[in-house]
Length: 94
Ligand SMILES: [Zn+2]
Image (cartoon, protein in one colour):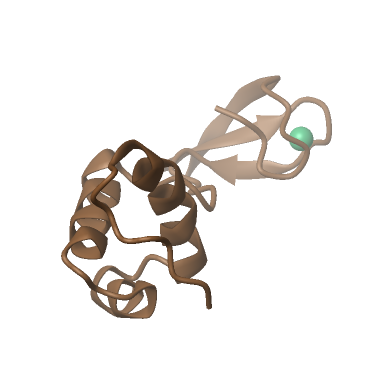
């Protein structure tokens, strides 16, 4: 786990807030809860689903509407995967 503010891994537990484990960053004193989602914090299933939609010809904005994942995030997943799949469509620019 990393501090969402400074990126430090020097984290301590800081009690429970709203039923969730609260943490505090020892370095910058920022408090945050356990399930804080960094921008790229999607599960592999969501990533796989987005890739599948992309490979089926869906545009990034359509994928965003269906999955709720921002299209620029989808692009960062699709680009490296597209290079591994010679049959994939070239990444769309938007
Ligand atoms: Zn911090």
